[in-house]
Amino acid sequence: MWVSRRTDYATRAILALALEGGGPLKLEELARRIAVPQSVLEQVMPTMRTAGIVRSERGQAGGYRLNKDPEEITLERIVRLFQGPLAPISCATRHNPEPCPMSVGCTLRDVWEEVRDATISLLGGVTFADLAARAAGPWTDQSPLPIAPARP
Image 1 (cartoon, helix red, strand yellow):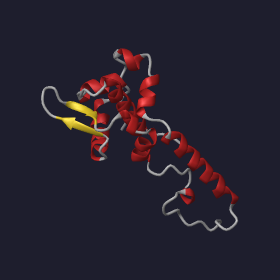
Image 2: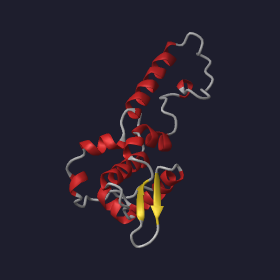
Image 3: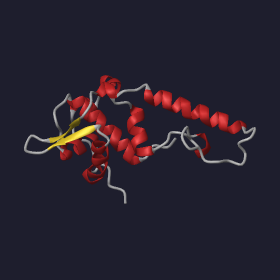
Image 4: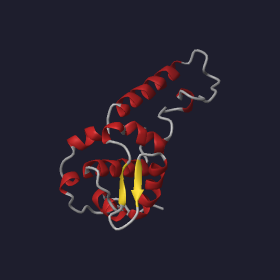
């Protein structure tokens, strides 16, 4: 499975908010902490707000904060939000698998379903509380990181 930049940036944002401990972070500060172009976060954060993962607060002391406890947000939830189904091939999705002329007696599909199930199990077993507890280095010292250039 290849994780898109948006998925990567979204997971970084959620981890930074989990480490913040409840207080809101302005978009500019969040972008600085996770070394992500602010313009990309401006596209990623509304998706997570619509999904109920974060909320935004207006005003001088406003910004983004988690809408749920970090213990309730799994890596699977964020990855699915941005990546979609976690099956490595369309015939192995749980819902509406793509028809395949090779489905009768196909031994490949069994393997792809195992890959799907292992991926879901792994990502579903990791919460952002777990990740925050293991965080070190730039995640905890809040030093500015170099910001990656925005991609077209």
